View 1 (cartoon, one colour):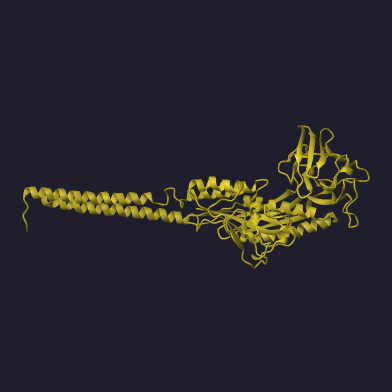
View 2 (cartoon, helix red, strand yellow):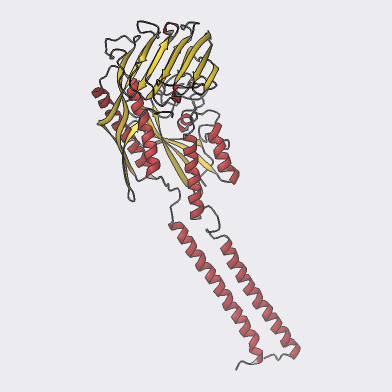
Length: 310
Length: 209
């Protein structure tokens, strides 16, 4: 039995014990939470999903093959395939080094030429009028429906004539008609007529060149120059030029199948004459991402050019 | 031994009770304070907060790179050789420093991180000419040493030989025409590291804390 005078001391000792208990629990809980936090992810760690890496790699591959396609014009499909393969291999090495340095992932991309599909590029790589014997002609001939992946004209603003140059793409039912009208060396108008309506837009050259993407309907050299492009048509059966003697510059048209309207490009073909060359239309590739916790491999056909109404 | 009277004893009980309660309250306050500063209370090292932050950083890079005209490649090439840094940046050491990159990149960084009291660094890491070379780095935005709990997100961008610098103060020279000598008038720190149409593979790294 505790004496009456000892009760206060007991209460005091009890308070101290309780206080130490509370402090102890707080320290233990705090330590547990701290350890838990430091174990889940290290500072500065990255979480790049294989899907994200695949998108990055595919985007780079698409641009590399596009540049290979447009770098030269005197190659056969076999040669362009070897050229594409060599450059994709170099890209793969560079990408692999970059990813390895920033993560523990091994990233690579492979190109298979035998499973890739080829298209055709009608091209004039030197400044000249847009003629092929006649100023009115058909760079992409009538026939089967084709996908039109690339349609650009790069006009010499000074040398082009004041009279209009017409370009049109048709799928047999609908057509997109574009008229490029020179007002002065520093001002052109692009008039369009398409299934979605008609429009006129002013486009300014830069550095003496008017670079128009007729497929997407915009100028590379003038952000305000936007018009209806041929991408309104999912496929085309022919592309026509009229008044080609009024336009001076370069052009390139890429379709997913060959067009025999102009001869094949050879080393003897003048840069100022139109000719056609093969391009890789879809690249058969494998993207692989390997790490300690991830094993990812994706076989796919990468479309080098946008298709349909994209 | 001193003998207490009944009144003195009562006062001693009261004093001891008060002392006991002060100790218990102090201990409780200490415990409460400890819980308030615990890492799980929405601080920078909370795993969920870091996960969200990393997702925001990653999304920022993806969104900027998906921009049609001013993607991450554009920002990587937005370089002024004369000032040896990016266009509009403060100096070569800190890049934009306390300022923000121009355009959509700066806007997104500002609204996503600065306005939420977050700090961030952006740097560009590039391959050296030789495979054995360490990767070089150029600060685009440097705001200090990342704190504990910082997260990073990266986006890999491929540069090509025939691309040009995008700053308004440069002409139409293509990347391969620039040199990596800082004393040169045509200075661009990222070298031509890959044979063929590819110029270099760079990593745009965003660190947030």
